[in-house]
Length: 450
Image (tube, rainbow, N blue to C red; front, side):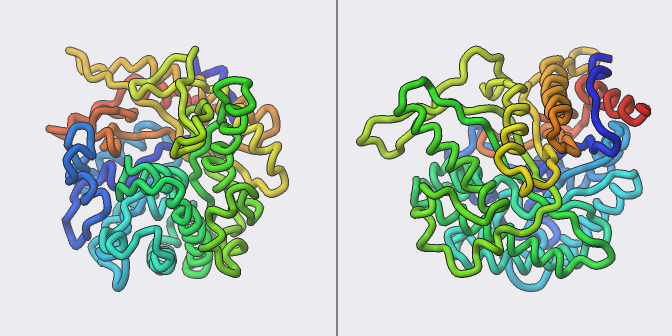
């Protein structure tokens, strides 16, 4: 097997990741309220193929089949997200017992199959009622989120090992509120920056609530921050300066508050009007692990002085790309991991790769085989980058492949396929791909290693 050259320490977790709105379906079943993605997908032109996550992979009804696939894979860890509007239809008030019961069933099924659950509290499906009241621009949403965290911590904390309060707050801020490409669809540019502060504050408040509400075990709490090396388009000082600014916005704006309790100096003026006494210590909660979601580096150039934004994206040339058009640069993952350790050292807890994956659209051939060799190559090269970083002294303790299933890919609808398992969205038939078997072999070999 090609993956046999990869080496990982004992106890390393090999897992998969998903998100509630992308796989669950059952969008209005059993007391679930509407989310911002239910509203956003109804906008003409918002989703490439005009689809929604109303049914998605129907995981709500097929979770046992999907856990059986994880068992077959040999994965010892699974990162899923809890749908806030499934627990509290309006984001406030009494919990929906049918929503809680679904996650009880899922978590118990995982544990019965020796799969360690990692629960994400917010993977972008904000209850629409809270968005109607201002969403993440409104500080009161932070209070509601802390209450929600206490509910799920009390209910599931005896069985869930790892917790992630907020998935990719930078993507929520930029895509959801600055550019309008994701729900809720606001295009506020730099006026969206208060969203970043409120999401970070929600992370901290949820960590506190989890530690106070979980019974029977000490919760392991981390994050899942999307990070990417930011490269200048040229050696021109303007491009270098623009890339440093974007690096501060995409990376530093989120890692520095969590680990150091402060914002990058140049960006603090964008949020200082919403920062209150005690906010930064709240954000800087002790983390048991630091989650890194990695997909690709970005190349940044300066713009003209009269432009709305001081930077623009340029193509990262010279590398193969996924079907999404994203450059495949595994060495950038190694670069980021080593750089993260060098920058933060004592403040940095152990790292888990909470997401990493690629989109390739191959479907079953006439024999039912999904030959997705490019995904195998992607996984092997990125796991090799992680292995190299570990050999260089970076404490990485897990890799969660995005994703277990082909699913609803946000604004791209069903046009992009990230899964180890092919899903026919008309029949809901699951077909493990060749990459599934490759990953299973790698996991089995790791378990056999002395």
